[in-house]
Image (tube, rainbow, N blue to C red; front, side, top):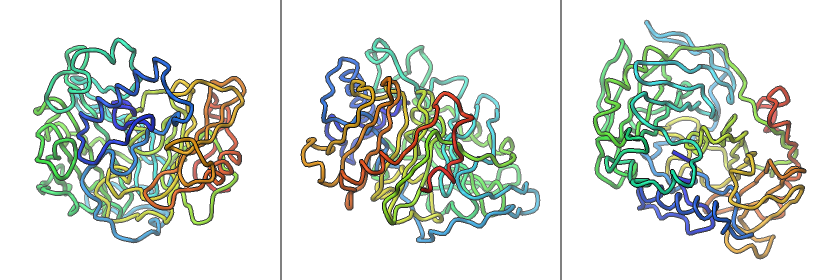
Length: 410
């Protein structure tokens, strides 16, 4: 599933809350075709296609207000559970692994409360990569997510990801309709998620969540959205339990450092070789370089039942940083240029909300800062100040990248 399949760009109206993922896919395909046809306007955001609050709706956060990250150190474990390292946020503590027909990839998203990795299946197509114009026009495109058809090539489609939460971050009681089970001696639960992943809708058998306690007071959860109601089954998903093992903590690297952050804003999540959050998972194979999301106030680090940007109220006010190839943009390249706009009409640059694009010298890489939220959006002048304070590394040489915990602090 591509980023543009999940959200509409600001070249059009933001999808209302009631739209299903299928509706958003169709809108995203039309936006993709407009981009490829060169119809994007100068006032339209190049990359503002993020899974912002209200666009992709999953089970509601039952979030507490604890904003203090769990202390560093080794997580304790109940009998029979492996001890896991518990470093400061923005580290990866597991690697990819296989479980039958399912294949967990290396994590590419990290936050103050969790890490996320894509999950692929031998029997499904996962369309988290750019598509050709021919593929975008293929029959059934935009209707394959909920049993209405198969993806290109005849296989059912699948969008699945594994979220590994830090100790104390996940609250299993926040999963609506969850059934408690035991798998490999571990506490677990399973639930069928609603149509369109919108909690106001009825359950859809193709949408599943399976969560388990991988060490004491720490949970992992796999979310699976398949056009085939039968696969992956809960039994298939439970096969992921025993394969999840701790690894030596590895700092999440990003291809930039910040020089200025407005007062009160704190880093929430990053993407390494991806955009931050579920947007990065939705476009995991798009070839993006990295990004980050900041919020004000700090988001809770406990009481979660889904990633921050999967709920209506998940990210209220903040801004995103994206570093991507210009091919991910819906705007023409402007080598060496800086362009800032209001999200709505490109008018008063001191009005709240909007985005700034800065292209590198040859126009192949674009840095974007975009303001998100329903309330205190940043003025254009602040967005431009953030953008001009960012130093972008050699995007093709990871040895020049910086650990996120350091890169996100001025």
